[in-house]
Length: 281
Length: 281
Image 1 (tube, rainbow over the protein chains, first blue to last red):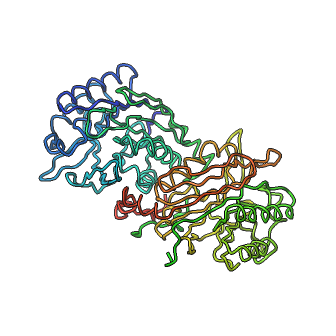
Image 2 (tube, rainbow over the protein chains, first blue to last red):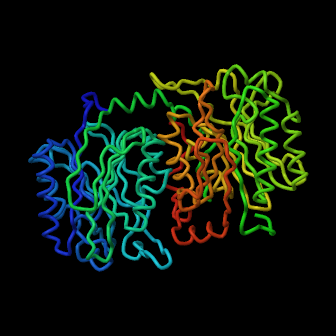
């Protein structure tokens, strides 16, 4: 962490409705980021997964952009104007023939300071329920994304990535104190798994854990669960949205992490000599 | 797994009161194991952590036994007589000058088929709340415990061990389909962390996860939380006890594991090339 680490960080999540109109999505995102800042003086504002594009095979290619592009330029401009960090949810990123599900992060000077390409693609097939094969159109990323800010070191994952405890542990060992996850769980996996996964990751790693979902749109082919939430390092939910469009705010007291890690020293008690996890299953 | 794998396994947890009278504890354990078997025809019966001894510094040494000893001989005899598996919670095991917090497992022929010495010792110090330093009297184990039965391959951990996702993942990669955890969370960490930890481990690894606690005794120096529970591979609680002494039963359908792992292929989607975890923090 840098020397000028703040003790309190104000974070906002924009749980926005996402439509099939890309420009409407960009306008909405900009509006909500501005509102988050003006209402709460947020230090960091987070958008949801695929915030400029429906989570639907038919739109990924058409809505994709190279970097820099229209969406990322908009985010960069607001970050600089408001002097805040923006975690740009994710967008379909075009790179040559490939499309990635990518989150771009902008610093206070508007410069891109990190980007995360979703590593674990959402290929599930639950009988008589939800089926999706993200890997049909999206190429997986191959890198863990942890970056420094003047708030704290931050880990960044996208949706299905959060289901893999190794990834979140690794981010923690790399110094992350806040882990941010733009995500779009659905109305099947959301009620079943969203809270316990977010809470267990926060608790096991004794970090703040913030998940940003789109609002629920019952008219879309893929209904996001909503319920964006922010969990503290004790595993308790600080604040949680419902299904509707909303800006969710929290103040993160970063000194809490040190206190909890001292009182319940989980990270110190790890036994890496006993459970090396480098072998494949 | 062996060829004669059963599809349905009947498991029972004996959430027993533990007293400062060792012989009373042994009698109670025997009674409850017999009751679990006679009422439900259990294939495997699980006792809680330190079932023959209060979870209190003052008793660990005095109640400790070498193997074989009085407690383990009793368990071995019942396992053979009833032709069931018994996971003997844990006891203070004496080995030379050292005392371990050890779980002994007996097969249907009464032979000891596995033993687990608690790896992660419970050294916590939460201000104005609970403080305990297990390592003052207990020596940590150094081995991961996974063993085969004709039910399925089983992983065995003790209490605080379950807080370490790497350990449970490793057991899963070693083939465990059912993970059993004799444990004694308390009335602070229990309400805060017991359910989410058990549910997340089951969900992340797509295994059955069974946690056996002592009943709550408001007169003891360390008040166990109770709430023994059994979680399915989707992360849902099948059955959960309250605080009182009780036998908890569940039928585990082992074919569910394969179905869930096919529909939501978390283990297949792991990326061990990306998040090797062998380095120390």
